[in-house]
Amino acid sequence: MVTTYKLLAYVVAVIFLASCGSSDEEKINLLLDKRVSAFELKDPERYSECIHEDYRTASGEEVMDKEKLVNRFRDHVSIIDTVSFGESERYIYINGTDARVMMLSSIDVKIDSYSMTYKAKEVVNLSKVLGEWKITKESMLNLLSGTMILEN
Image 1 (tube, rainbow, N blue to C red):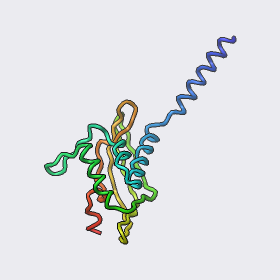
Image 2: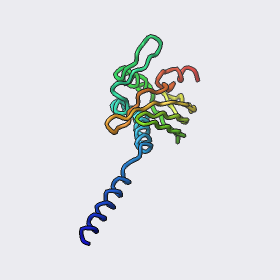
Image 3: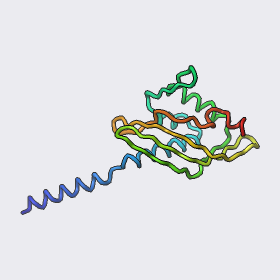
Image 4: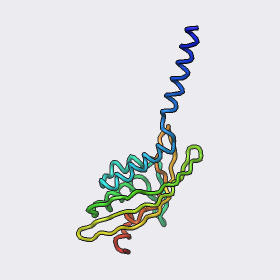
């Protein structure tokens, strides 16, 4: 009888611990929150931690890898005094070890005395490797391309 109770207690403990683990959706949201904080803190290292090591995307004839992407991030956020994201809407679609997130965000940017607020629509692709989600492709925010400052 004691053995049955120990076995039952063990099974309940395992189920409880398993249920405490973060879901993939929660992990993706945490990653995207980290990405947002990287923009707000203008922190290339933090941004780099969000990007998959095998990140590759073509832009015209140029292939953008993780190193180029992080350098581009560093260059573009260096001219911005402050950037802050309002609450965004996120639509997460998970298919095994791949995910796609569509986001609608409100972004406030200030450079010297110039400030603006704009709405951004993004699509971010992610992959899960060794239990950790990383960004494999993102639609470039105009913030990164530098054109949003000139166009608006």
